[in-house]
Length: 152
Image 1 (tube, rainbow, N blue to C red):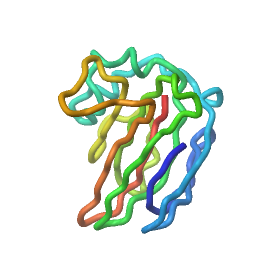
Image 2: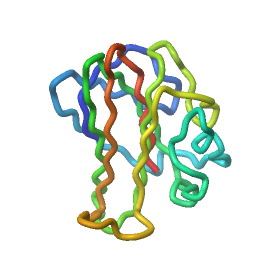
Image 3: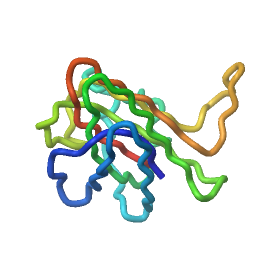
């Protein structure tokens, strides 16, 4: 399940699900990891021009990747949350921003404006408790961006 607020403008390629989210709303979407595909190479994610997650975390992103695309308007914040039906499921999530006319997706992604990822923690974090949900936050200041969300 993904939650966010934004809008969609570009046509996504086959296999990438477009989310037609509207500003100042919560959009809920249901997906299935069985529809995704494994990515043999995750080098794109640890590239300094993308910096989604370090290569040491690659094992947490080795499952099927289901990709979603939407857009974040300028002067906006977006929070994307994955809530598995199974509370014992171990999902990971990443989301990156790039130009609204871009049509590049992992593993061909060589750079982006920003990227955030969340996965099961290796160690507890002081003052925080992790459950089965995973969330990332993005923001746009002076420009709208295309947002690609990967659920693994």
